[in-house]
Image (cartoon, rainbow over all chains, first blue to last red):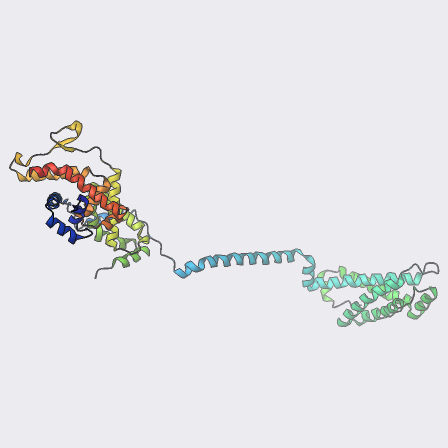
Length: 254
Length: 190
């Protein structure tokens, strides 16, 4: 017969025995174990419960007052959807910041680029037109001077045909601008110039002295040169005028 | 109608600090009792109570509701009391001996037959029991107090002491053995 050891007896005493019925049965049948258990029972029953000093009804209040000042206030928790969207919000804010920086950079670059600013300003654009027209008239005047003064020895050395071809394209643009602006005097001068340029540009070879004489007579290049000079001098003076005066005059009327 | 522990907890976590007062009032007596059983004296028990409710407040957000709030505070209280006992680990205690001997820290216990005053005897038994209890390690003492006086199960004791149930059982067993050994002279004389 296997006796119960002290650990098993203690478990049984506290009602935590794995098999209470078996223990009971054994204690009834085994005098030695029953005596051990009786001794244990007496000893543990003899351990007096510790008498706890009585606390008053206001003990809770006392404890509360003693700890109250040490307790921080909990912050109200964020709603779950705010917690979820917060990282996304930060990401959006960062993206927005980048976009703003990009646009600001672009704007700053535009401010730093004078041609763009000129194009956006009507007065400045007018001045550019005068400059371009003045340049075209200047080149045309040089061509006419060369044509009028070309001698028998240096005709072949003059690139009149090539220069005429280049001026022809510009002249068409300037003439169309003058038509749109309703400046028919300028347009008439440019029309005469264009006919001369066409003749020169369409020469099969570089023109010889005879060809040039014919053109001088047919086209009255002296008169044309005179018109161009007057036109150029007026355009030049308009381009240099203050902005208010320049805007007061529509187109380049002579 | 009494407000539920859970609704109070939610109120506190939403920023109503003063709502905690209700929980303190509700559980301070229970916590004091167990703390006193473990520490064995009033000042330490009161300190354990304060520490318990401070810790409880700080960990309130972690309370998952797997046990009741009463059990939760009970466990924290037991732990706090145990911590205090561990911090103030007593110097060598008086032992029960044949004579009073300060050098050996022995305490002579009065025999029951020494006098007719049973009240005096009762006090002496209590003193002997207290001396025997102080011989236990903090873990053994706590395990025994929870088992014998608080009628807690082995699993609950294990949870309070943060040890395995089998270790809790062993702690109770060792405590009982030591107490029986220390108190044996008293039983002989009864």
